Every structure is written in structure tokens, then in C-alpha cells.
Image (cartoon, rainbow, N blue to C red; front, side):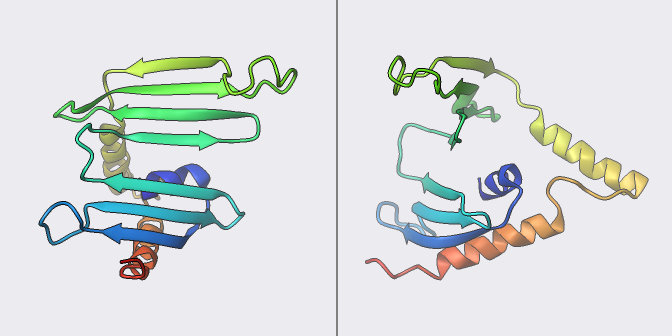
Length: 159
């Protein structure tokens, strides 16, 4: 999720605060993570990842001055997060009181997700043609690992 958010923002993120805990499952790693992030231009981002939710969810919401995008679901081999839905809406600035809080929405549903295949194709093409990778570069991966390290630096700050 962090690399997707970084890719969409096209900017570096830094961790402002993190809550990382293992409170439910008897496992070595965390079962819940909540992050407060901020981009280099001041865009605020919140992330929640949970292994304790029984209802599988994958959701990404982006709100801007003129509209919003919501991605829900993720097509995987298990199909436990499917289907994928992309909902977009525009803010009703002309008459804020007419639809305040209930903008018109347009939703598209996807039963097939070929993004993994496209990512692999780009990687193979970059090797075969000796061209630079555009998505999922070493630098982008390093930025995400740096962000994860920042989040872990908060571990233990809240009991």
C-alpha cells in the first residue's frame, strides 16, 4: 500500500506518527498498524493495516479539492477481497447545499486485475531492451523501506 500511495502522490512521504501492535494473534510480527504520513508538499495520508479484521478489506480513498476516488477490493487468486470497484465523484461547488455530503458517484467494477502482469511485463521489457524501469524502481522501493523504518522507530511509544 505504501508504494502505491507514493506512486500516486509522486512525492516522498515521511512518517509523522505510527501505532504498531501485536495484540490479537500470537505471532512474531504486528497484527495492526496505523500510520500518519505527510508528503513533501504537505499532503496528509493515513494508513490502517489490520490482520484482525475478519471481513477482508482493501480500500484506498483519495480526497481532493475538486473530487474523490475510492478503490475498494482487490482481485487476487483467493478472490477474498474481490471484486475491485473504483468510485469517483466531483465536489458540487456550484450549489454546496443541494448535495452537501452526498455527491453524485460513478462506479466501475473490475473482475480481472492484470496490473501484476503489466508490472512484470515492464520489468522483463526493461531487461530485454536495456531501458529504465518507470514503476517500482530501486529508488521507489528504497523510499518505502525508509518509510517503514521511520514507522518502526515509533514502536513501543504507545503501550
